[in-house]
Image 1 (spheres, rainbow, N blue to C red):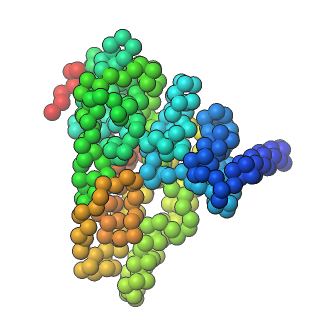
Image 2 (cartoon, rainbow, N blue to C red; image 1 turned 45 degrees about the vertical axis):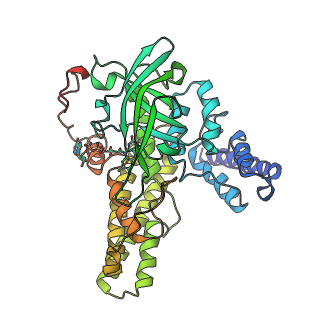
Image 3 (spheres, protein in one colour; image 1 turned 90 degrees about the horizontal axis):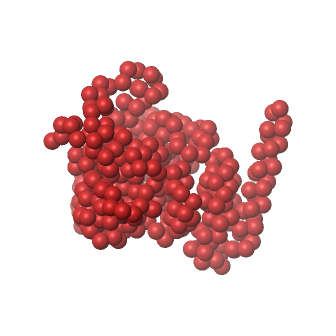
Length: 402
Ligand SMILES: Cc1cc2nc3c(=O)[nH]c(=O)nc-3n(C[C@H](O)[C@H](O)[C@H](O)COP(=O)(O)OP(=O)(O)OC[C@H]3O[C@@H](n4cnc5c(N)ncnc54)[C@H](O)[C@@H]3O)c2cc1C
């Protein structure tokens, strides 16, 4: 039995290697335009190997993507711009693959993969963050269109986004989770107004987005009417993996920055060395946990391991960046770079540990706060009793709001 399984895997691996060789032979990286290469990669089913055929994949186990990535990196092939299109790759693609119509998949996935079209996520509102299902943005049906009115907030990279993942209330008379519908929003549509919000770091990576009588064609609805919560779950579970599920090399990322600071400051305090080593071990444990979760993952909506990784990522980044500025002494407090241009990518580390320290404060808020992730782990993994939810069965219209 074991032999048969491993033989099957080997055959799959050989087939993938073959496809990668064909892709590289037809599109030699040094001589092929970046855009053309990424389009060919998508067409060959090597963009996201777990996605179905025609959606940039081959319907295979996600862990096999490593064969593609390793071979393409060795050949010096262009890579998708994940920092610029983190929401496209990490959230929009899995949501469209899981819930989109064949037309939506055909229209949106390829330019998303090549980052020709950038995506943003229009979920949070001034009165609805952790309690996302309580959101107030309204979409009212008008023939073949929906008319959308409302305000979103903290919308990362909305200023460069071509499309947004929008959840709106379509039925206020049913309990909050049941009255939501999910749409793709054309960010260039009339009535969409994007305004910058400046962060602690000085950057304006995110925005407020106002929607005033924006007309959304019904064929941009993702999933059924009233099924917005179910579709949102796919986005949210994938978001946690996109933020916290990194599978970087041993000793890279945040902990590499701490080791650099340690070396550059010439610190030889044994207590701080011990602190650094403990964080290094914790970073390695988190990296290996993410690797294992990635290998166990099946295509589709990730399980609670995404929440574990995201929670650990936030705590580690904050602890590591605190050690960095601590090691730097008074210089660690001198952050003056408040004139930064408007960011067009999401980067947690920029090389300046002081930026990393300030930016990491947001890690325990974005993509679900650490408190909310602990609730999820308590309830769904440990089986602890759920929080009292008094508004669960009330029509949304009757839920008290501030
Ligand atoms: C850098 C950054 C980028 C972001 N990008 C996006 C984006 O692109 N798109 C988008 O839609 N949103 C985005 N967000 C918003 C983010 O998802 C929300 O900020 C987050 O979900 C928390 O919501 P809130 O800010 O309304 O806080 P609230 O939900 O009001 O929470 C306030 C405090 O109460 C705690 N709390 C709330 N409910 C509970 C509970 N049940 N149990 C225990 N504690 C609780 C929270 O943990 C928090 O400490 C971003 C946020 C940041 C910081």
